[in-house]
Image (cartoon, rainbow, N blue to C red):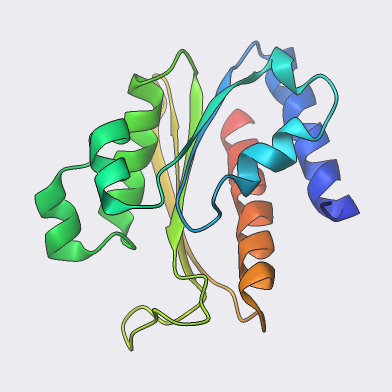
Length: 163
């Protein structure tokens, strides 16, 4: 289902989180649950994976993660502040210690000059360690390619927060 590279990253993430007794939560939009799926493909994921939120619609981001509607209206769902709020909201709505949130434009349509197809925002939040954000631009040829590149980046972002 996932590439060897993605499964290897997920396995390393699980092992590192287990060593530190950290539980993980995901909040996904453009990847539609693929980050959670990659983690759960690895045996033993239940030791560290708390839950995943697939908040594809703006309303879901508001209702499930507490992202303010006016923030989405003002900046758009594909923005750093929304990604940060998604990560914070996922932590608050779970028993996890570490969250990743991902929102972006996977295409093939939906891009704009300011947010072209391939634009992805990834935010991580860790209890008592604050928030981090990175903006990525993936030049993959397909929607699936963009989504899988985003999954890989999200897994790496989680690993970076464990260290």
